[in-house]
Length: 458
Image 1 (cartoon, rainbow, N blue to C red):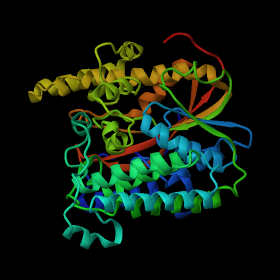
Image 2 (image 1 turned 180 degrees about the vertical axis):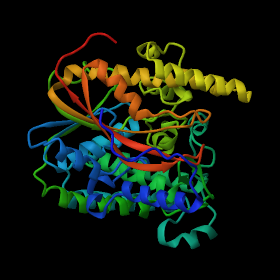
Image 3 (image 1 turned 180 degrees about the horizontal axis):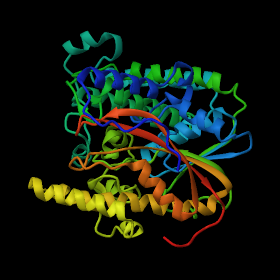
């Protein structure tokens, strides 16, 4: 395999160096102004940038009529950019909120003027409903705070409320959100409903809720009130303006399938994929369902713990909160010496430190399940690839499990080769600060080529 010339950091960096590198990494991942149409309708906080898709699409020599797959589609960066480039985009996503977001972001069919007129009507209906409750929204919030509501504030069911991060949205903004959501459901034209709901999701994780996003999602200072309707309407106006721009593209086709990335033959036609550009979950303790929990619950994609558990079982096992007794993906790496060594080192460190929680006991298991799941994914992907198909996997080194280093890119490459892939390179994308070790960790792009000959051995 070919690796770029940048060596791994061999020392702990100074605070100034860490700050400088953090800013540089943030710039690499920032959404450029020209990229905002469609991409910015709703974006996962850890999404990779559209320019990375363009770079590798160009490197792979992709052209009109070819199909670009993202098997870990998330909120649709690859499939949206594929459409803009005139390629046919195909996404696979198991998370219902992310699947909804990516599906909506590649739908550029609504007429922008009619969409905006419908949104303004819905906003008027929401304002009227709030006024009947004695609540004033938007630019008269100061007056609203002086007027006690005449009606009891609406709230979620107890089970829905328990699914949320505590205090992730305050009572009055929640009431306004539920009123607006119902107005969207009642008065939206069917062709626009998904775009309206996605605009509400973006408002929830922005000026309406109490969330803040860093390396992890957290809850910040409470907003006792927020201008919900105007925040939503501003997002819809941006969608309408973007639709005017997007229709100028000679765009390709795009669709997103709600499915498990480890079970691909049943949803992708044989020999139909020319290239893959994707970023799977990283092996760490990030529960990716928490990042989208507020909008997932308020838009009705998750209403019970049973629903949450059901869809988690179709996600890659990247953290201990979605490990189950029936999981068997670790069998795919039972003979992989380095992965077994890492798992043993994590367990030895746990014993040395006296860590006894249930989650900490699962660190070795989830490490093996993650890489086993990736091996299973790569194996199941092979029938869908055309001979010579090229693949780019954006992955990152990790040290979340008791500071034992996991070189994800190298390990992924070592899993791909026995399955019939050629490892062309491991390219550095950026470095980022490890919160556990205070060292710079590499985010890399593992570039593979499918040679077109399936090997059946695991």
